[in-house]
Image (cartoon, rainbow, N blue to C red; front, side, top):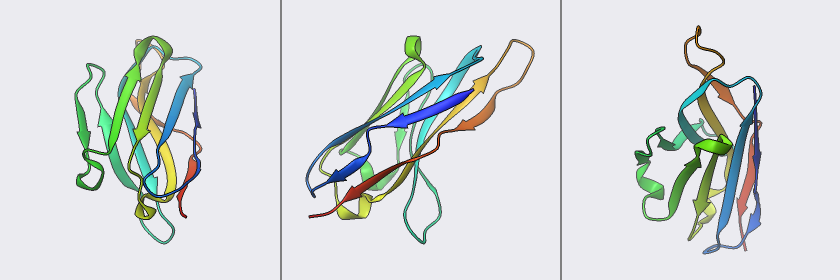
Length: 120
């Protein structure tokens, strides 16, 4: 199983970016899909989560600015980030809970990360 993120880059404060994360490989089922971020010198933090049925949660600092969504047919999760601030600068990672067949439990798989830099 592989998770591949795309869409990071450099953006000015107040700008927008859309991240994507596609899961591929031996996938039987995907449960929750998450976006985490890690800023320099800080611990990795959970930014947002989306359940398979579409229920979402957000950390307070991004509520009203970020939107998570998913396409179950494409095994892909998205993160639309608006009104970006310098403090959003971090490496963003996607994580998915995946069953590789009907006989195994869900386990976490991580993407490689994509850099988001918010600066003028």
